[in-house]
Length: 175
Length: 309
Image (cartoon, rainbow over all chains, first blue to last red; front, top):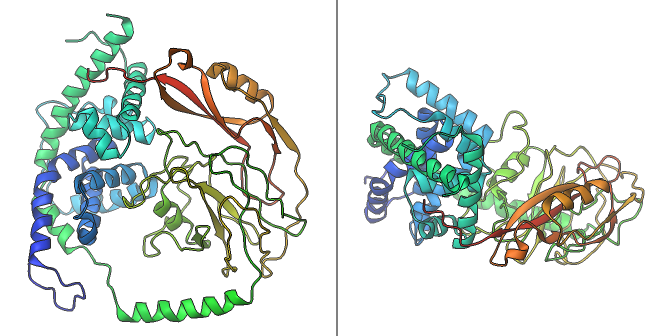
């Protein structure tokens, strides 16, 4: 990458290339997680962008972690539940979307707003565990590593979260 | 298959369908344009002038601190047990450490140091018990109170185990008042104070000590009278419902955490409480910004539940 004129922060091509690879590998899953946890495509995109921006700013530190993707996901979870950050993200998303034609097409499978709304009503740690479990289809071990919690704790979180979702959502016969 | 198992299976199926829809939506997002915005976002500039300014400010603060009486925090028990108002508090003390107990269970909620500190930076400094400034002062702060935020998360992976328990809203302290909350990383508790105005001396002795609090002369003392006490009963071994009823009888709020266990006798029962049974100050002094006395209970949940669906 070129050095920005006037910038004090000189970027090395090696470091920023590594970030680009990391971004390419993680962006789809992180955006999906952000959309699920915020309930809005625009806000989810903003939240994911801010999480990656923070990672990019501190890539010297974040890039040295064993799992930078886990760090980004935790940031997404934090930003998703922070009301005032969400309001800021909403304002930016609204301004950006107003300037361009919406590019997000309707999914072939409709978004289950009730399901994700129920997920967002859970306590933050349960919502993140459920988000990783359902959005990214992660194993309990992966979720535990991402959340930096013991596996038994994650099992407990998922158990309580799923039971709570079952109580919140109208029971249907499995198809 | 039990009704509950059917419900959980249905939830898992619904979650899988929801995942496919989310992934389709995420695929439509212009991640290339997002990458450009990430790359071009304003940077945190490291300027020699900032370093010089910080050095000058540190020298000035050190000189100011040198003439101040020592500042201390209230007594804290590292394992969240017997927490009492600081022994050194007197009538001229305007700060009271509530017995806001922090659950040290593995699945306890964790606190967002940066978020709290950025929010509170409009009303004062946020420092840990060692006098270290925490949070990023360049972060934006909300224009208005965002409302109750009882559970928060740390953003810094270098300090992932910070645990924080808030009780209700966290209003900004007024002149002469202090809002306090407790964060506990693992086994080592740390107390944080929000202090409006100039920083007092921070010759702190550690989180499990009890030393008098410096009274901020600019804000004036707040009258402090010994509060009424509350006797917290021993609710370990009771069911959650029984424990809540027993604690409700003495007028304390209850917050419940899960405690994974492989002992069936512990499932559904209180396995730990914090603070432990005993007598505590029931209310903060007039003018303080803390809320109702709260007891945290840990209720057993069977570990090893099959959650893979």
